[in-house]
Length: 118
Length: 112
Image (cartoon, rainbow over all chains, first blue to last red; front, side, top):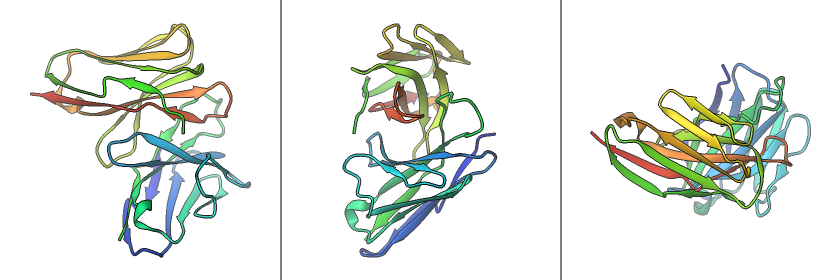
């Protein structure tokens, strides 16, 4: 149980285009999902907290108009990188917490999506 | 963003050796988690710790939640080649619903 899936697993796009990444909880409902960014050989940095049915909460320094987050259902959150530039190239990882269980602190992660902007 | 201090940064050991890595913070956490990440994949949860002083095992893995709630360690006994990967600690702050802060990572290499 507690499987989180991301799509696509990798994407290459031209500078200036927008890219959407999906994060799905396959066997549980998630009222909260988190989006992280990881640069090569670095740790995961939290970008934003996605809440079902409400606006996402962004971490300091993360542009909300650049990284659009939509959490329209209890099993799906999307991250759209708008007008992507080469410096946006990174490994984007989502995680989700089972919303119907007590807050154990355990988060389950997707496989990650590698974005390369040319 | 905030990060936890994790050490060592990398380790290269022989198969069969034991490994220890630790994580420290200036902040108090109410949950500590240890994850392993393989290249090109998302982190996989290894062990979760919920109480200060708690010692928890999962197979060859043992982790402890420090008494001060500001540190944790992970031990791997009798390492095998598939233990290769990057290990991250993560802490859940006392405020902030399920929001995790990650350590800087320990890269483990195991020689057969």
